[in-house]
Image (cartoon, rainbow, N blue to C red; front, top):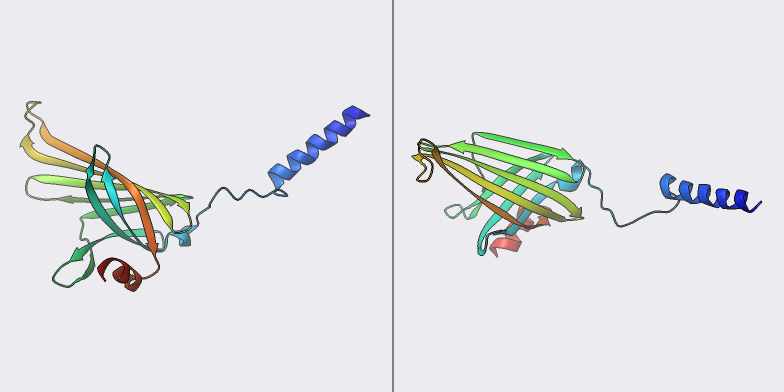
Length: 167
């Protein structure tokens, strides 16, 4: 009799945990619309905390764009890159852009984690390959990279972004 009672309690506990009778509020779950808006924040170089990179992104319908401040126009403008890619899976968004110039090519990868409403954690990797020969490895192009990390705050509109960062 006691065994049947313990089995019933165990089954009820299992059902409560896995069917949703007991809710857990610790996990924030993103959907595509959770990312829509403007995101901005200062990212720190992981090897030199005094070195920072300010990042501004606009995300709409699962597509990210990097914004830069244009002093002449006194406004934020979208970057112009040769190739851009965005992928969203659950609480993770990945945004990559690539460019090349006369003797260099650059890739910036942004790994964004949706930690809670209106808060993203970002790890950004900037990787540059110069056509100049590496001083330490003969016959190989010089490559360098920097890793930044930090949080991005949410702004519902371009105007809200301007007011927060420019006024």
